[in-house]
Picture (cartoon, rainbow, N blue to C red):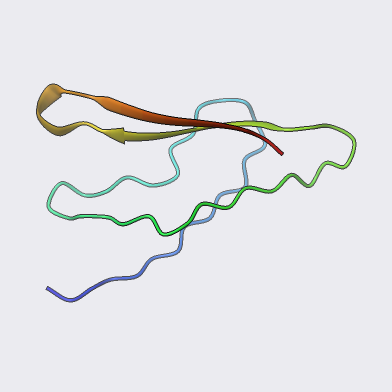
Amino acid sequence: MANVYTNYKAKLSTSALTTVYTVGSETTAIIKSIRVSNEDTENDCKVSLFLVDSKMFAVEFILAMLYV
């Protein structure tokens, strides 16, 4: 199967948990980079990033917390 390169972007304006990308069940994804920016010059932004591997009912969370 040929490689498919995809660029996902999201403008988040709420503190609600938001899914930006979901890998299909028959595919493999390689995340090359994740960029976060804060356009609010008055307030800091706290970002929690979750990468979830949910193979066979065992769920593994990889968490990063950033202040931007």
